[in-house]
Image 1 (tube, rainbow, N blue to C red):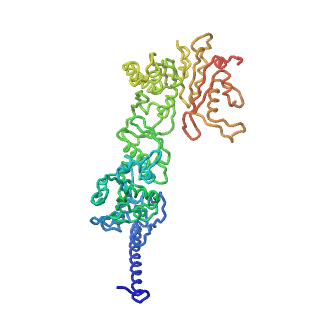
Image 2: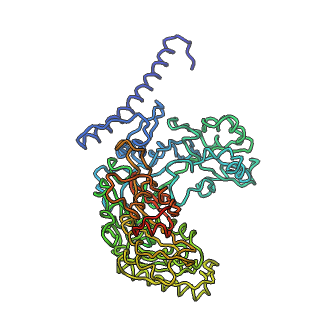
Image 3: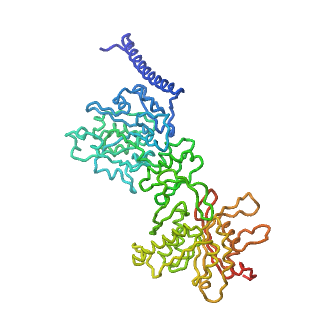
Length: 621
């Protein structure tokens, strides 16, 4: 029946339609408002709907778009949605994953649409139940595009000429960057539950061609605030439908859309990707579990054998057991123990206290460093994995067959490597009896393997004509350094790696004799490699030019060698003074230990002139 425009019946018909739409919209919004208020009132406080798109605040939020208003409504309280849907079909309808017989709907989903399992705000997380935290399970809904398999390489190429779909891949999403194993962006249609016969009827020219689905980032193809666009899948799969692809993927340029149409690409279904805690990184899990006021979560730790060593900040201390439990779970079975450092490295044995956070109370570790196997008790012997690169660099300054002395040998990592790789004769010392015991055992075990392999590691390294030798003593480093001059073959290199007090042992060189004539100490002057802590000068402390950490370290060495005695104020920039003695001073930064505080390695040669000055002779130089 038709009505004349402007007639009473025509106006009534229009008015009834408008009123019906307005009433329907009002009823839907009323139901939503009532659900929000009732659920919030039960908690004793009102909750407001968050209309903004804040990345942090909406990370686990849901998005819902009514078919009447097209206005996205977001809330941070997933449990409120349980009042809106009476069954699973309603929930799927809200997500656009509607399945009614063979009529399927596809659309571009909001990236933050997740599972509808309510988040219990009363959940108290601890080291025992953190795996059950609802926020550790997320479901991300990703749009897909179906393409012939023969075009996958050109579409996804990462070479010089990148494929046109590379900027739109789901792996670009922040939520998927750190998951393990990595998400496969190319999926089989059968695995996604897509009926290939329905997509490709017999009359379709692609009937005999293999097809694949590519997962896309909804932000890249639809936009973060783009309203969901529902398209019947039977229309979306129509070959060469440019309008459909442009409507579903509005952020793709016309040029890209045309190229996709040219290869008969078509819109695929929305694919749910469920992320569980065991796929996510330690950092991501801790950011979810820890309160926002203690963010960022701890990121750095040191693995020593089967032990993870942490150095937690004070605001992380109340959650140390939880942090330890997460790390142990994610890194097992290789990791069996998680400990936290208490206090600083101190005492004559250079050890520190530690607190067991998770796992078994076993700190005797076994590890391999550059072909050398080591064993020691982490609670009784000082160890720093970060020095492995420094040990390797120091070996480059030593020639095969050299005599080397290590005054603070620890578990013997440098000692064993110098002997095995360069065939050096190594004299080692440490005040810690446990360190001496482990150093001897490590040297004995590795040298035995070295001899059994015919003088090599078995990988071609360590081949030398020199016979390695290791002697380890337990005593004070001052006496050890002082007595090196009594050896039949004095060392060409002396390592003093005790940054806290190493400069205080330099006075032991005063007892080295000044030997004249051609001998080992004169033909090749021994080199000291000393490690010390240093900080650069504060430019506001005095009117003198400030020194950087390197020059401060050199001045500390100069003061240890030739103290200025009764000087009113210590002299600065004494590198030139030492070089006039022939010391050839070199300094370099090894590593940071605290803001503004670094470890510096100062290397210098021990010359006869230096020894005379140290012994009180007034000589011209």
